[in-house]
Image 1 (cartoon, chains in turn blue, purple):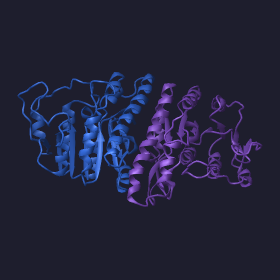
Image 2 (cartoon, rainbow over the protein chains, first blue to last red; image 1 turned 135 degrees about the vertical axis):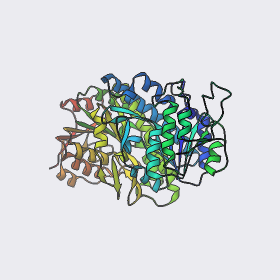
Image 3 (cartoon, rainbow over the protein chains, first blue to last red; image 1 turned 90 degrees about the horizontal axis):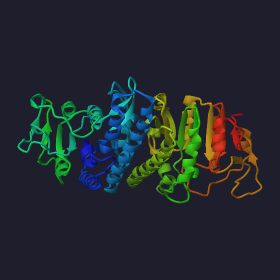
Image 4 (cartoon, rainbow over the protein chains, first blue to last red; image 1 turned 180 degrees about the vertical axis):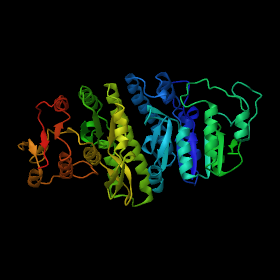
Length: 258
Length: 258
């Protein structure tokens, strides 16, 4: 089984509310359609989730009743994005179906406390491709919290131990510093726990309620312990995902648990 | 708690593929918005589900691989309808969120074999209104099967024992014969098991993969045993749902278990 993450910054314009990057998503769907392996797909919420979630503090959980209309509204919006991703996949003959994270997982303190992998297994067992996503979810201690796409990626990796996990990002992989600010920084081809310690903490310039790049890398390191290979490729460069899925050599960062 | 079913023949035009009856759905959302009770909503799939499902025999379960693209496509389409219903509710300040039936239920032989009511309870406990729907679902014996809106209504009624269950249909209630064919037939104000036995079996003229009117009435009778009051009102007549929710006298059929 191969687990693919479509980053919210790849399939949406994170700076503009609810802007779907249709052509990019359609191309990535095409690159996935030629894979002969069983696929599981997760996508981020991008500008269909983070902007409104941040504005109303949804990542901090229930504070006041007026947040609830925004919980409903963000859930609606991320499902709109999910249907667009699924439509792109179906158009490329990938039999994609939606599985919201709260259909399988229960949450507490912003983390997963139980995960019913059968919800995904049942879908995959009849030849369908489950597509999950970052979402606002009920949370036993916080009322509600944010389940990032990466959090559900980790739960899936732990349960299904995939051969390959591919993260499609809007950069070629992990750099020594932010490649959008520092032109001389170099791609780290192999990233492990020691690389994380060496990395200077950088902050994203766009609204993101699921933590910094640093937090994302910690999660990827955890995921890399539950699969044969874990890699980050640039989803904006045509062919990179396709090559990664075929096991061909490709510009990327491979994430290793040690 | 009040459980409301929005019939697929009310919120869609069942004769035309994917035709949403937006104004009707918005009005029903408005009628629900004034209710001070906790609401659970279920809607049918109407022409977003039945037409393609029937064409490819999805109600008979897995027969050949080529059905799978239609399973994915119907699931996508019913979620598109679900988001339209949720949008109409949110626009009327009902904090509606989507809960697909397979998030809570597992299915075998076209029936529910287990139901995890906590999936709904968690959503309702933070003040949100769960909205479920008729869907194509994984099925342990059939591969996949159809979960009608009425089937998920029954599971919800059993688990939550609502005060009131209201079915919004495209007729005033149950008649002695099909009111669209026989102008002299009369509304049955109180419908029980003996009324069902007396009723001549009629067949719907539109594609419906969830059984005849007769099957629907059997299910309503079962539901009526799990709530204080179960009634059918005409969702196409403004004010009927509103009156039913307020407990006022209204043209309807009350369904009784004995």
